[in-house]
Length: 235
Image (cartoon, rainbow, N blue to C red; front, top):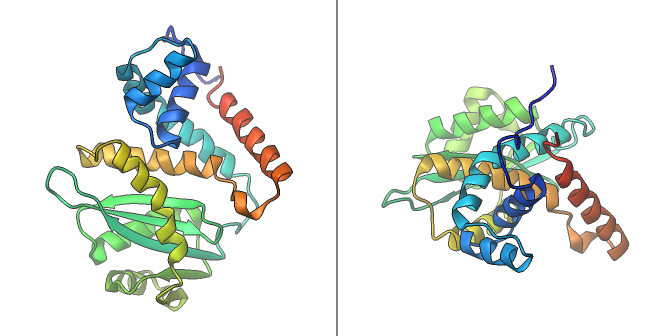
């Protein structure tokens, strides 16, 4: 059975929808910023349409990106994981965003919880291992919830802690913090979880570690990423 075209009921072209979603999620732009930039390209849409498109098509594009990652070599991301959590204010409450990245800075999982106790850490680790398998080393901060959860799972011997060891994961929060400021914070935990999952996948797709490659290699990787993005969910 062939997959249905997700754009079949929309008058706007798929290319415009993909461009709007990429601009809004990838860059620290507001909805009206995206509207103005598209207007400069003679594309007349409303910022309300941009909001609807990222909510409707963002999960579809993120799913396509994750499918592409299945073809990576086995144990590609399982050498070392870095785990960290940050708080986010939503309507007076303070939920926590848990994030896991591999040794190259690729985001493996993003999970939102009301607390950062053992139960939340255990749920986060189970979700992470269900998708990515078992790592050789897990680098965390000194939060006791990690060790308590790892004792239940039985992999506490893989944990490493240190003052500077977890900088890779802490730096991975920076693109999200820039998006948070552009969006003037979030309104609901459910939409927050949805957005961070989409943002993580799209950030992985376009992040090429420019400082580690020469200009020619970077241009090839960037062009390949754009070409793949234009093919996502193609009819």
